Image 1: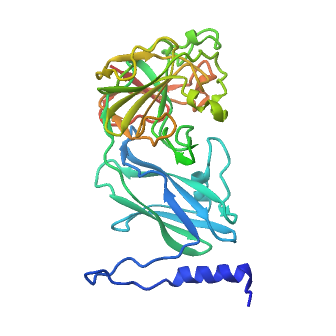
Image 2: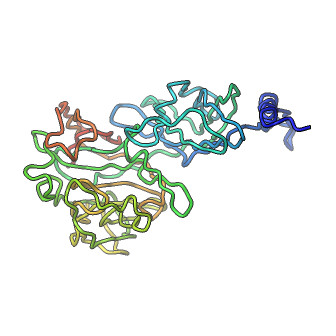
Length: 386
């Protein structure tokens, strides 16, 4: 007898609720029972607890969720738990899920109900105290249509890498970095059919003067920006693995259009340098000036060595230095590697979010002056590098 799709779906959920029989391992120890779930969920890349300038640690990662059934599924609740102890680290229900469903900066959240055979991404920024043991693994208790199941198990990565800053000088602004729904943190790309997020911990740096201005004069002239001509320094010793030069300088505030051109993806970074600083870790410096790159592929470099000059090439709206660590020698086809700076001076925070490249003044500078060690700056932090 044909019971129809609704009856079949109800039967599947009943199976989820009832599951199941624990079996015994080779030595007689109980093993985790299998659980049939109406969704599949995987973490894009294992998160790591990153100490940040707000005095806490952030686990920044993405959970890809697929409704594989023939019925709509409502995301009711999501809990993030320690994979070993089941201690609850964060919980989101109803409208609290909406910020996790914002797929692009300033966009409305994606629906909490998934149509059949559709997927979504939950973007997590789980905050931990600065001190104390971090979980070694995570599991997500996801409630859909009233049924709760464990999904998205993932290990937690090791401590971030300690590096030197890529710039020198006062009043460098983290204009696009961690954490939350910033452009970098939401910049998933599909390369050769695989999803990657190389910019998870990337930072766009601009420089200001004491009045909070990132440029003085005509905003269309890149040479009027304070970051223009600033040297980019190697954050660690290593070997140059990629150099792109010859891309033209853009006139602010218009990017070159490569971001939306599948045939021009390799030019999104503009002129760039990539340095392998340890096995499986690559440092990239992007949007550099044409003809101002001082290194070549295969060259060994030392920590603090000048690699190039900051510019305005590629997918950029104004001169800045884009910096990131990643796990492959590819600007986009890689996952971001977390890091902290060995030392910098906290010069405060600006009050204006994200309109940084269009406004003459960046807003009021909330003063601060203290040396930070072993932390990652956050978006809108103002820094002095020495």
